[in-house]
Length: 136
Image (cartoon, rainbow, N blue to C red; front, side, top):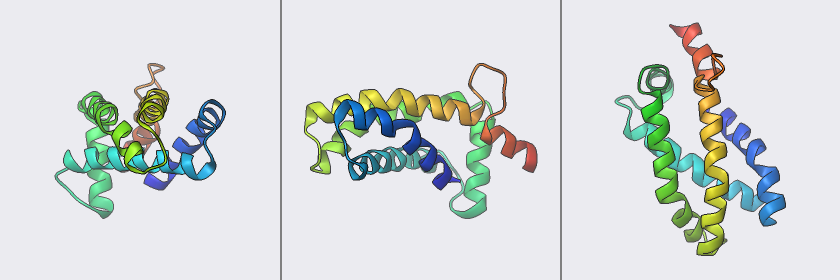
């Protein structure tokens, strides 16, 4: 499932990062990897389960439950505070460019997570909601 989310994120941000910042595919992959690392870290920190299906179930319960807005807020805050420095640490981006990339990517990540959790204000179930329907 995380690979699917990573692929969706890559598709969502690739065009803008390439056009706006002139990033190569490998640089875009670096950005996406850093975003996924930070988001996964937040999910792991908020999960009492780890690994395999138990971790997936726990993540789904967190996102489906009343804590989905809290989880989204936590991920967004973590991205705001960590992504620019993580991008700079890769040696591929200077501070200014890393901050601008983060400012560009974070709203798209928020939108993607909102759509996945069904928090899209359209009343529709996101992927996580559909997963909950299948397992719950």
